Length: 108
Image (tube, rainbow, N blue to C red; front, top):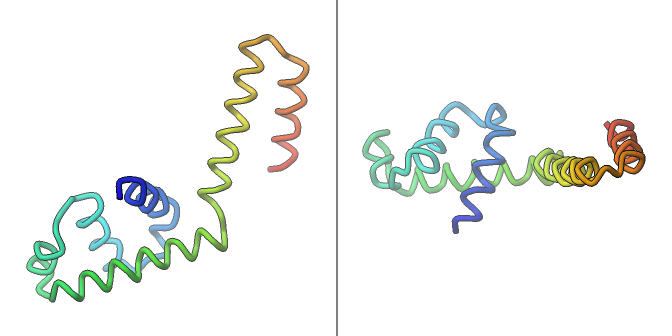
């Protein structure tokens, strides 16, 4: 469950502006404010089921956007590549680090 929450929050960081303002608000209450569905429903004057459905749609939209755009996946890939380059620099493998860095920059 924690892994899913972390993933969904990362997706939200990338794609939040593509959700409606209501989806953003409810998402923040639930995933970042740690409020229960009941607490959100009471605060928003709606049913617990309505909050659940809205969250399900919002998370579904985030997952769909990621499957199409792959921003989170690309970020992870870049982080791995940069860590490898840093490791090469620390090991003083300068020529290989230069080559990998050049490849990385050309891919951008």
